[in-house]
Length: 388
Image (cartoon, rainbow, N blue to C red; front, top):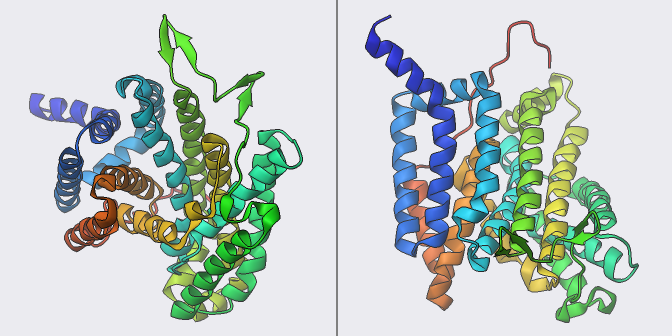
């Protein structure tokens, strides 16, 4: 092997770790910088990914990540730990990071329907809201621990996913989307007209999560420097996000993920191959709802107040856009798309009434340039002899 090839091989080994560092550096700049710097980062990322796909660099990066999984994960954890300090301890910047992690969890759950099965669900915000309201009611009305509220949110959203999934999954295509729009509308009307759920006034005074007797809403001190409480929620949110990414990737590579993709291609052929369409579809809807429920619980106990406007139809559209931009049926891509769109959404607040218009224009331009999303679905690769 020549000296140049040895040098190139060493560089390729470092690519996964370098990629993680570059992504977090770009994320920090996007959060702390102006709208224009955020747009430049998004354009630059899109350009690099297009170039990498064209020349096979992205596929090689995936291979290197699998080969050096431990070192890549270590670098990722270090970057998450350092992220709050990189954001200069600014409460607003830290808030954006927390919301990016929460929304990424919702997008991961939605990806099971849109990405894996090709069925557009317009009610992710409703399930997000069900999780938030369940956790809030368990803690505020019943006085239980927020962790009990989180578990209750997971159970209730799983059940709601099955209950609402039965009528929705009896339909296909546009009819399925129409049913989910109806579910979103029903949720909003139910909350607004139910006084016990706070009605249009919402639910205030939701307690924060606590660990070892210490509230995560309590600011601390590190080396004589005040530490905003948002740092606690960054670590909690991104820890759960990493766990759910691993679960998503395992599901994608499992028989369940293959069954979802088979249904997306052709339901009739899938059924002839022995796939129970109703069971597999309900599983997708239920698991996605659980992800949204986890995110809803995190959101409720982080903000301490929830209102029906936090879970409206516009929010559902934003979640759908996150999946489309990141790359359908790719957990890493969906996560990146959710984080980038959350940051852009915050930056566009300066445009007030024109915010959604600007948001739509940016999304359309990106999807025209990169119709498959930032990181499209990858081919599954299994070790020889491995059974799934």
